[in-house]
Length: 70
Image (cartoon, rainbow, N blue to C red; front, side, top):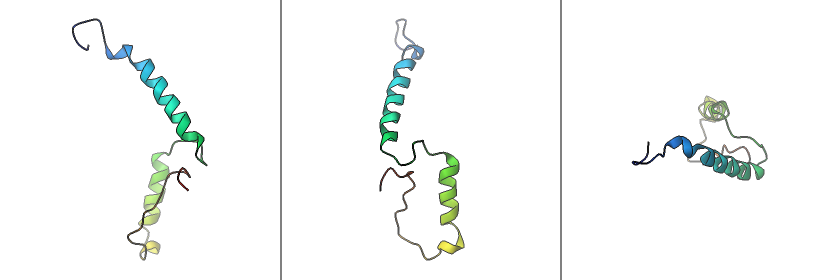
């Protein structure tokens, strides 16, 4: 309950979900890959960067955004 009246977090949930979904759709429209990144997507990038093949890469900004920023 929030405060002393009949107000609980469940009353706000639909509005929060609607705003979140609208925001997410807006963000995904500008991307080459139209889905949200998953832990496995980022894990693959991290694993690749930790590979000995990348020992000469340093002080770089590596973007893993699914094509959002090109």
